[in-house]
Image 1 (tube, helix red, strand yellow):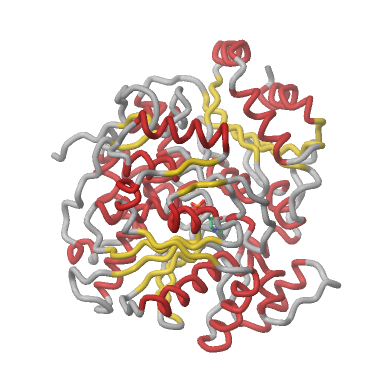
Image 2 (image 1 turned 180 degrees about the vertical axis):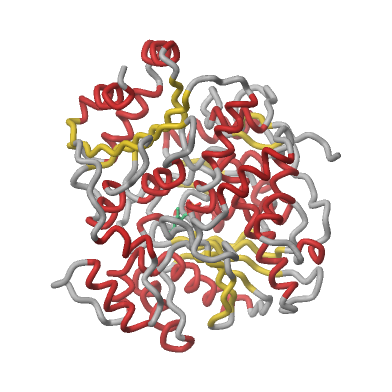
Length: 497
Ligand SMILES: *Cc1c(COP(=O)(O)O)cnc(C)c1O
């Protein structure tokens, strides 16, 4: 039996709690993020792991970090999450193209990588509720600018013991994104458009979350709010699995020798996915460089270069919208670790970030970032990467993955490093059909996104995923639109209180 892993906040004093409690809470009461007190080493060798399925690999990794879950509980969560919802038995296949291996993380219900964690989070959360004697029904409240809302809806739909309410800006998401959400099935789901923008939705949700009287009233009526936000440790840990799995897969296919180091390239926004790769490295996966790829919102590139994090700059809208972020929340966990697990240092920097929008780390901390390499790609370079890979290798990637592919090309040119490299492929090209078609020189503003998907199929031969074809004629189930001042009322209405 390995040592128990406990969790504490990156800020404030060190109150240690168990994994299931950290998952239930999401954010620490002092505003910090939960981090493990140590990162355990894999206790099977990678050649041994290479003989395991995705689900078995998930079990080997997650049991080491979620130590207060029983083996049966973990297997239940894993098997409920990674099943036929995914359109391939492999769950996360690895495809070789253009001199790199693309780790396809988009075979789940909403054809993007957030499904990897949001498929399992509902089960981790309801299991945690049971373990901690929470008798209330868990109500997930989320504000979304499009993608996370749908992935959370798909994850929580019909999960016993939960309800999910998603608010989105009625006039602020793409037609496909809206259609994906308003056709969501499941009696425990509720989707509400608001007259306002994403910030209004977010502010409204925060207000409901932090209203003590409402909290008390709902608790007496059998409900308790929770969040499926990307800073929940229950979203981070399942993401470590596919880095272990991809290394094991390379080994199994004899693409690398045991112990051979590889590089990993991750298209980055909130810094969750690449932080999972960093943890995988610490668990014993021979990863050399963690290549952090940004789009034109290149705060992280500048940070790795100079040691200064500075969000005071213009926000750029790009064709890789899930990476259009100026505050990468999960970077806080890395800051805490490179400060020698110091809550004082972390809290000081985060305070500076919220007051001045910037902070600068010490040289000593900067030296601990040598695992990372930061790069960025412009819009032009992103589109060129899609076109080049398709023309030369017949392999189709989306805009986010293309940012990573482009940064990897620059990295190779700059360093001459020829190590085997895995690129995290974070969305299906059909999630961003219009941009992908534009990149291929076949865009057409005159037709809708579904017709455009048909054309992309004709051009590429890549099957249109069920996530797109099934919503085409699906019935709209959610039609409520409220003013931003009426959000609490909408919640009450759905819960019947
Ligand atoms: C969320 C997302 C990202 C960014 O991942 P982080 O973990 O936030 O860094 C990249 N690509 C796609 C398609 C995403 O949905």
